[in-house]
Length: 502
Image 1 (cartoon, one colour):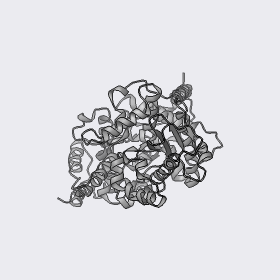
Image 2 (cartoon, rainbow, N blue to C red; image 1 turned 45 degrees about the horizontal axis):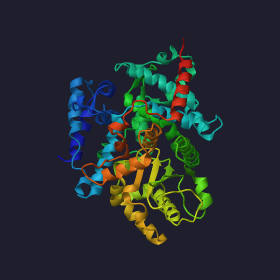
Image 3 (cartoon, helix red, strand yellow; image 1 turned 90 degrees about the vertical axis):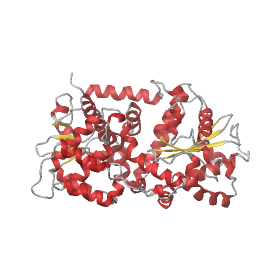
Image 4 (spheres, rainbow, N blue to C red; image 1 turned 90 degrees about the horizontal axis):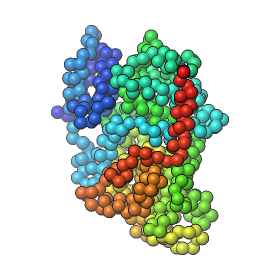
């Protein structure tokens, strides 16, 4: 049966069901499975449950009289939801590019549901957004749009998150949950909750008018849920329903960045890019090895494109370029080559141009920098969020080579300077993990990259993402950390404890 026929079955079934009762039952199930291992989900796929909530708001309750949702009704709807995926458009391409695109869309849909908010993410939010002064444009923009400063907002997020995590039945609440246990004022709690919640009518309108919405139901199957912007449903009595713990965790991890980027515009995006580079440099500085900053490189290669950082090792030279970006929703669900080119030309593709240009100049040996290795280079492009571009060789074959080779030919740069397998695109979490492994003395960057290249050269050992290379047993250490994270994590929770009534 074609997808749109299957979709009509779901939509027609939803039109006969009372929406609020369905949302509540879906939320109960989400909280239940989020406390279970993926092997225990038994067909209750969380991405389909949150999509069912979204569709129930858009299509539910339109036929009078409606009937209240029951567990049996939800189960039947989930069976229909699980039958929706049909032949994937990208798998019709038998090449590596089609497979890459299929894996990428699946990763955007599912991977974030399978991980939990952790101390790394919380510490990073604090370092990037709470340590800046009140007069900083990013702080002022957040206050203007949410009614609270970033630190108070994060503290309230954490207090609510802790309450949700205490019991899978902690799904609905009223403001007294936060007021009775903390010294926040009633106005502060109300402002916070109203900033991350909508009434049913408000949610319906938000889904209809939000920017960058995906209109085609087929592509909504792999869309990251729009519920992350408003993870709570508010009723007329001032009570709140948490759709999902994981959705709320995604809100905590994204709301400060999203407010900066989506509402602040290009000027604040530039401000954040500067903070992002400083954050990376702070963590690089903890390593025992030396490094060169962009300013250092400009002194030697002033007319050439350079990267943000360079780490010189005896075995290789590692160039790092920070790009504080994410991929737009429409490209996440449909990453065609033309779409990828438009999306990445000013970020990842530009970073590769910079890397080749810098490597080309370094290989000429005219500068005064101490760079022991001038014939083996790695380029690391660090993004704020995961782009799921795969390893360098597959990325090159899929789309990158077609964009970079003409540039290299025009500039007379040897393509062999940076083999495709030496190009690594990773997100900030993966870079932090890499640096923590090195800081703990468990391995070195050259050795990790050498092993990565070796494994990725064989399809039987190849890894889809860089983080998978760090999931080896020798790197599994419970107390992996970075000094900057450790300091701020203690500071963050000291502040949180001070908010709790004694």
